[in-house]
Length: 234
Image (cartoon, rainbow, N blue to C red; front, side, top):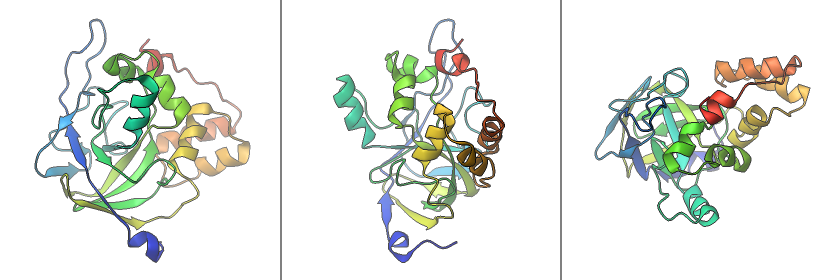
């Protein structure tokens, strides 16, 4: 489905590209690659992520459905104001891509973007974990990500390519504009959506299969989910 002409005419700028290596960060806790640093030059986007970037636990990060993480740069001003933290800046939450002008309400599951020369598709929102709290030294961080809805989103890579800071990002296709990242992620994290919404999300073909399965389970009446491992590292 082609996007409307006014949307197709829009373009955004990739303001930052970030990568990181796996490191032992916290005594008694698993290693992490959340500490991303600005990458200079053109990065290669492969089906499993940016070449040279790393993820410590591939069961919950990276892979085909979470190859690239995008986080809106404008959220950082809000975090700085709310938390009184001047050190928070793009790249600080482990994202790979930073832009201004796109957020969870503007972007929908299934949106296809040309990111540099790569073609990517929005696959899911982010489920915040305890590593955000450890990395930022803010114990409430994972909880605040959930309650504010400022989670960012993930892409699957449809066509490998190169991308760099300063290059353009354009919207190519928008098959399901009604399913914004904010709406779908809220349904996933709060687990309080009505049954018709849950059934529709379970059938949403462009949504990550793991999320679709979770929505199908909720639609069947099972809304319980153990979150201590993700949110507390237990």
